[in-house]
Length: 228
Image (cartoon, rainbow, N blue to C red; front, top):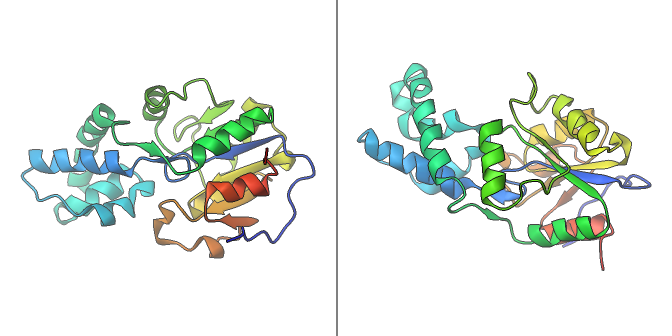
């Protein structure tokens, strides 16, 4: 299946920025594992994996609601620090790159193009996760959810990543699996690509107004003209 590409790519692509969880990495298994541990501590039955996976892009509170929603928001808020402690301990154990991502990044690097990460994940988790998967120092820019006062869908983190990577927004591409990724990338002036393989937060990538929609990283290789 070919990528749906309704608009033209920038004339000269300087680099690509990516969302992290759900776009580059399938981190849901570790996020779920942390919830299972906490459910055991709280003597609460653990929910099934599928409904948790569908909301992990919304953050820790959304994950906790899958098991503790009946306790109310104040109780969920109180559970967040312990959940993050557990997640930090298991983080990276079951997290993997999505099929085709390793090859995509290698092709980007082989072309001398820059790539970076713009995530809403907290910085202390982002930095440690990149160390654990062997990506520390590999990306030209990493902007986390608490790097700035604003996070996606605001364009500020994307613009900061462009600045750190030495990338002109008009010559950049932003790739993500959530509506807020497309909104942030478009508002920052980048060409936007929505991916269907991520968490999607229950949304339809075709309806997000992205410049292109792809089903597999190999389609990004073709779209960005990275073929060998």
